[in-house]
Image (cartoon, rainbow, N blue to C red):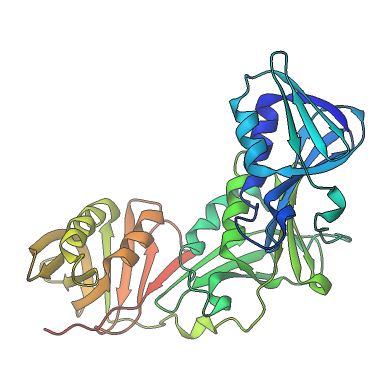
Length: 371
């Protein structure tokens, strides 16, 4: 292989794929990045066997070739170089990196030892704008579980219905659902559970340009592929039965409140300081007659905090308690000035929704408290 490219372009490409490099494992080649000439460009690829990322860098290709080299070493080296043109060449299993004033040689591993990626054929199951997807995915991925004890809960359900794509994340204590409009390219419906980490990577990589993301499903290889002209993300699907989340979403409520998001966020952050030593539990009291929401936290060893927030409240009102982290996670991701809260009794699921986005909802389970 003998190619030349710009340092800044190579550094950006290496940064894109580095998130898929395995940090631990029995195969040394998984700590490497695959460099391969392809179609007059330099192809970079990395995989941890769950998620794989491929991107292309514009280059002048004088001789075809391929090699894998340690990801961290190559990234650190390229980032240390001055901007401008650099040359990459291979001889046996050694990569040479040359600039006008510097020369380095890196020991690599043969490309034949690098895992192969699934072959994608046929039409995509759907297309979605990268900007839209990069906005929607983070609204649900934070609600997935991080504990691998129930793998199915570490993933996001993607389900297509006609011209809509529904994304759902649930961890047993909270649930997020976001619906977006998409273009269908195949009669094959999409119903798949994809690791939340993968969707976060897709959102990170494909948010810079508003291009179309094509989504391919390879059921035979249990894989999903997200593709743009300059990037591909491959991911295994999570096997198992996703919870019947529709049963979790309440359909009737006794109280509804509308409030400004920022004042409640400030009140929550203050209360959470006093709730750290009491399982992060904060109390929320809704008073329809006064039009006030009271946020409070009380820990005997620390002290107490109480903040009043104005709101429009209808119904019976009442008091309930939550893990403050869950409320902050939710409200910090919602857009718009006003938030709608709907609830029943003190232990019933609570629904939160931006007033300006009826295609997004979040459910939080209250915690039991002793008065």
